[in-house]
Length: 324
Image (cartoon, rainbow, N blue to C red; front, side, top):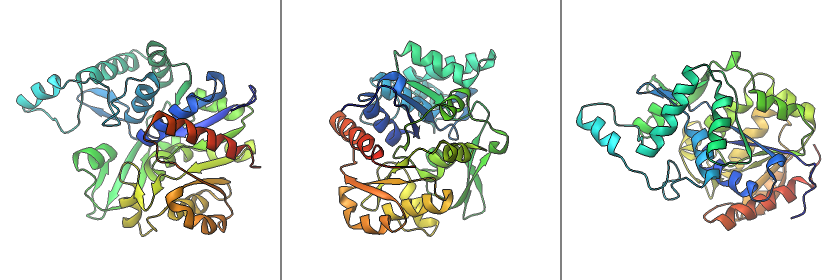
C-alpha cells in the first residue's frame, strides 16, 4: 500500500482490540507516520504498584511479548509471585505474572523518582525495541469509576476484574479528568498536520471516552479538520472483547454496531465522519449511513497477523477517501 511519507495518523486505543489494530497499522505505517494514544483511565494502584493495563497491552503487542492466547499479559508467563501472595493471604484477584511484575516495579520506581508517565513509556518502548511512538492520553491521574444499579461506585478494575463485570452499570465517571491535560506527545500530535484519526475497536465508554473527554481534545480534533473514523467494537451484536455489549444493554442502548455508531454521533456531534462495519453487520450499513456517516464493510475480526494488517490497509484506504 503506497502511503505518502508525509502522512501522519493518530490512533486512539484501549487494550486488546485496540492493540490488535495498532499492530496492523504498525506493519503498514513507518514509525514517523503514526502516534498511538493509549487510554489511562483503567490505570490503578495495586499492592503499592502503578499498573497501566491498556498501555502495557499496547506495549507488549508491538514488542511481540504479548500472550496471544489470553490477549493480555506476557508470553511464557509464570505465576509464582501470585501463588506465594495467595498462600500468605494477600489480594490475588488481579493476575500479576512474574514477567509482568518487572514492568510494574520499574514503572513505579521511575514515577516515584519524578519521571512522567510519558517518560516511562518512552523508556519502556526503547527497551522493548518498539519503533512507533506510544503516548499516554495524559500524564495526570485520571481514574474510571463505574456507577452500578445497586448504588455502588466501583473503580474500573474492581468492576472489571474483581467483580467480573457482574454488577449492572448505570454510567461512568472519570475522576480527575476536569484537571487533566493531553500528554506532551498527544498535544504534539494534535498540533501537527494530521492525515486522519483512527479510533481503534475499543470500548466506547471506558476506553475511548476518557481520551476524548480530556478538556479541549474534541475541539482540537474538530479544528484539525481531518477525517475521524471508528472501527466498530461490536460485531454481530457481541463485543469482540470485554463487557461493551453488556454495558450497552444495561444502559438501554441497542446492542449492535448501529448502537455504537449512534453513540458516537450523539456524544461527539459531527466529530466522527466514517465507520467501519464487519461483514456480519452489512445489513446495518444503510442505517449507519442515515446517521451521516460514511461506511465500509469489511472483515474486522482480527484473528491472525494477516487479519490485522488487512484491516489496517482497508481503514487507511477508507480514510483517504473522506473529507473532514
